[in-house]
Length: 394
Length: 105
Ligand code: SF4
Ligand code: SF4
Image (cartoon, rainbow over all chains, first blue to last red; front, side, top):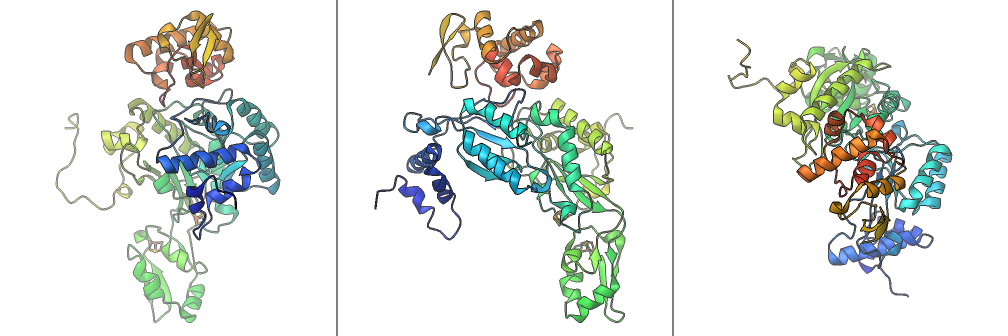
């Protein structure tokens, strides 16, 4: 048996899970860059430092982002990853592809790059890992002209919007996530491709409060489908659940976070106090045949979610409890532009919108973008008697 | 570091073509970098941007935020990309002889 070049990395293949090392090895026979990638990583595991240099500015003509420059700090030792740039490709709404499109992307990437891909990065984009500066433009030209794809966002720009699969496959979707995501992507091409802000800005869209794309934690502006009337109950189907031995009292009623449900054993009816329901989806998830979202649909907008970098992780705050979401989404677009303008004016370099709101105060933010404070924005009513007032108020 | 022949002199550049000796910068060097960035010949507005970036860098040691750049020069972002297809960071800052920006522009 020949001695392995990567004894440390090999250990990562021994666990029960899929291993990125095994995947890269598959390509290493055909692509020298994949082999050098493994060899350099092996050295990093030995030295316990990264052997990528910090930053790199390369790109595609007329785009300010979409390519992340990467250089090895030991190009003599690993010549095939001396330059190993990443290309971000804007994914289709809900990540629906034809196999033809997937094959096209892979073929183009084997021609111009390392052949290694990541479907998908945490922003949602297709990530094409590793190519040289000279290959960037021809690779992009083919991706765009032949396969019909565009670059995704990177840097201090709007990042590629992403959404759950919504109405394409999910009966709970209260908005057309796919159309909205596509529309916003097309409407905000400048913001996406020409970084102009203090830092990044992410929009993620979920069709209902189950929030399958975890927009509330992973985006600056989550859009979450909801309904304004009351959820629909089919009592006939409720009774079938009961007849099948499903414990409605304990599994559903007792777990409603706001005590909005009541189960009447005698009449076998499930009663809803609609004004108490906070649309958490629990009861609907447990009894999908009997309960459904209401009919007057739109979305809740939130603001400020982010992962930790400058400050700790933030979950988003409710910003607009209900906004209708029908094309051409003008109300939303007007508001988000106001928010960008406020953030751009007030934010420091590398400050996300949530951090600026935290620093300057929600009251000021709401005032400046012209929104009223609403009860839905707070978790519970305040318990202390002090109130904020502005000196210009008498 | 590799060297490049710019403005008739040998200048040290990094792998992305940013000059490493900012004090050696002059107009001839700027124009030669502009050639590599498909930004040649440089129009009046291109010089306005470059001179603003240059001055800001000499005053503050960093590149200005984009908002500042567009407000102070009165040149909007679309025009900047027309003048410098690489954009403000990869194009204009490089031509202005700034070190590689790390995030802001
Ligand atoms: S977020 Fe809601 S609508 Fe979207 S896939 Fe999940 S359950 Fe379905
Ligand atoms: S959706 Fe949630 S809050 Fe509303 S009734 Fe069902 S369990 Fe209660």
